[in-house]
Length: 81
Length: 232
View 1 (cartoon, one colour):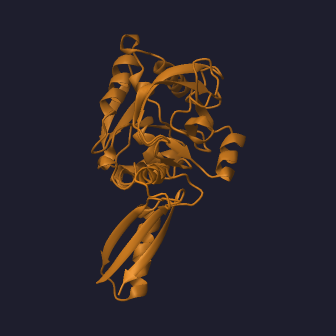
View 2 (tube, one colour):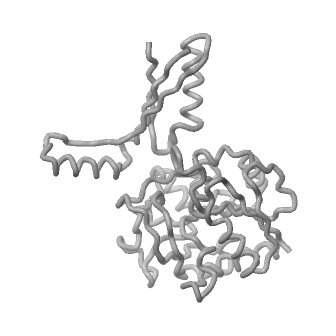
View 3 (cartoon, chains in turn brown, purple):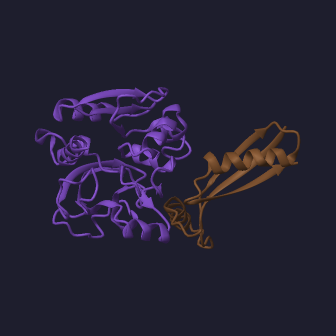
């Protein structure tokens, strides 16, 4: 069993209103050194596969077909060893 | 007479509004289609209604897009069958790839439920053929994720091919910043696919059918659709 961690983030060119709102709130807390906040999604998948390559292929398919919308989002896959 | 099909997903909540609008106001034949149905025989026009299909989990429309009926909807649309997606229905059509682009959270992060004005941008579609270019309609919106986005080349192609059918405007038809309440790129309220047989729009014409309930401007759009279907 392979454990994949997927980070889905808004593309850099896309305005992130949730991140902006959180950024604003952090400034209200006095954390003025925070210069940017971007909010994304974190998804964990347990994948049954014979090899890491095979597992990666499955997670790639999951990302492109459903988990991320590539019109506005990027994704990154990390496998837990 | 044309038969309309209204698709019902778990979490749809404008399905009955659409049914009522078509059946009792437009006096048309209309059927509900459960999302697990695969049979669209006898249906001339599909409505993908508003609501919160699958609780908007992951992204609005992302899960509904994989409902069994959506495969048939895609085939129907690819054969030229007319499809209207309203609000969540628009989001589902985007996720299904029938219309280009994506929806983001409203710019001000608030769910907006109010009447707005939209301007007809072209009469070159079955949805707008009997409207007038520049005509303004008073139609309610009700969404949290209606901030339409597409990349610059995609936007240019929408503009060049006259695929933008409705834009948010003020009551006089001016494209003011304030009128574009959700931050949509180029004031986009409704667009069609390149085949011009699929319309996705965030405003709810099916909720603007009776003067007694505020506005009956939505009727104009359905009049146009019925007129186009009767000509075919």
